[in-house]
Image 1 (tube, one colour):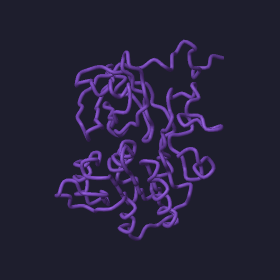
Image 2: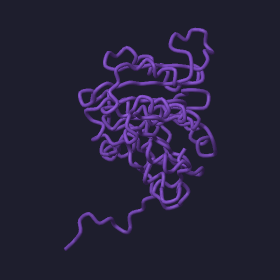
Image 3: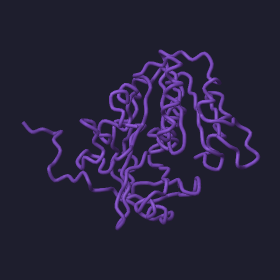
Image 4: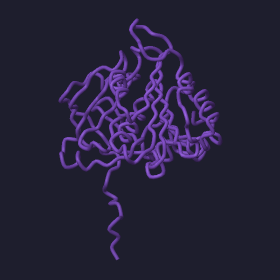
Length: 286
């Protein structure tokens, strides 16, 4: 009997889809926002992904690299990325303009467990480039507001000029169905009216949290995890309901190169979303 689900041996998992840059602009000096659309409109509208997954972006002649998808699957057709300039591939991406072409393949990774998260409160803590993957979660929760309880956002940055998507998050503070707290270590503008201090100073602002029905999502620089995790454990949030997205060392996206392997774990396949339990047993993840 013919197996209709069998993948053809001729399919190439490394073949990217051509995509066009629709919009791009600087978020900070070294981070740019990219909004792209797969060239084939049917494929663009049918591109399915989960919040927390990533895609590989390629530039002809420069190579490819993995990037978190910052948009939400509840808004199909366009894909959004926040990309920091760190090397050859990202420098090539930064030189591209609107209407230029790139390659996209994916999506990859496990994503956040949306089915388990539904009906629960969502506490999102982000810092630095951690805003990129967690923006997808936030927008998804807001687009499907009736499926979740409280939605709480804690966003920290070194200074206002380095806070990714600052204006977007400031505008979201006006929503009555979102508890949004923003903080910077130091004000470099002279007109910052939000909180001042590291992101953990925002935790006392969370009142009447019910730990058993709360999912805590965290992403940020490595130094942030130690202190944020300590605060989450003080709140008695179950360890399997503390979720982190970690994309260190990923390269091919499909578990073939072994670049992201840690013992028996492949970050690109088993992650990038891990629970606190995973981190306890695999400390190299952070």
